Length: 115
Image (cartoon, rainbow, N blue to C red):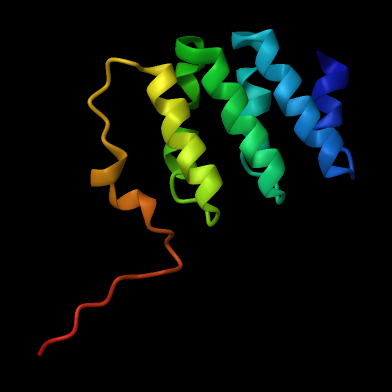
């Protein structure tokens, strides 16, 4: 596992994404490293990390706060995958992403204008 964790810092995004994906196959022991990959500058790496956490399932419960942050990712694919991962981690949750304001990236503030 140390080599995979080191690969998360590789200069090549393909290597980082593959490492995140492979760490997801390890299970709960890899969750902290995969959580760290959610902050990667590459959309593909963040997407791989979110998918890995979803595949780990309920054993990735400690990733819920980080996945909630991922719901505000600037990329829709990452936001959608984070929603799916949350449902895999806690299948009995009442979480409804369509009702969550976190789906709107923070850099697009909603402004109300008086008529």
